[in-house]
Length: 197
Image (tube, rainbow, N blue to C red; front, side, top):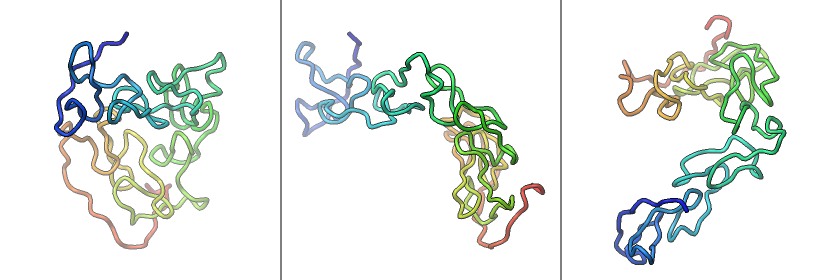
């Protein structure tokens, strides 16, 4: 049986147990929910694709193979079950540029900053990128989002922290890298050719 950690107490809940914890009748304490469960009295399952302690991790596999406690589980043909852009054991490995898509079999014909591991190039067929997007976004209607480790205006910055702390707009969060200056949103409607970036 997994071990629990003692949870903090909250007024107004059964036996003072906060959401994300449950009263243990043996120990007479509030204890954290088991991985895969959350909410008041640990009655809610993590919603797909979340799993684990406090539902803080994400599965990179199909819903039917995402275990709420442990993450992705696989039959013998694991590579067929990974989401586009991911491969390997537990689908934790990302495609490496210039490859993307299912089993990383497709190839981007655009620059590294404009290639998403799941969907490929963000730019339209004329290889033009709109330059009036908020930092961290680009492309037609600003639907493209910078891929890790890139961030900022036109994805020109590069994070030197782990992916979880790399914000696509400002770079590394929590003081891991000092931001030299704030990026302003450009409001003009001009375009930049990707080949000139």
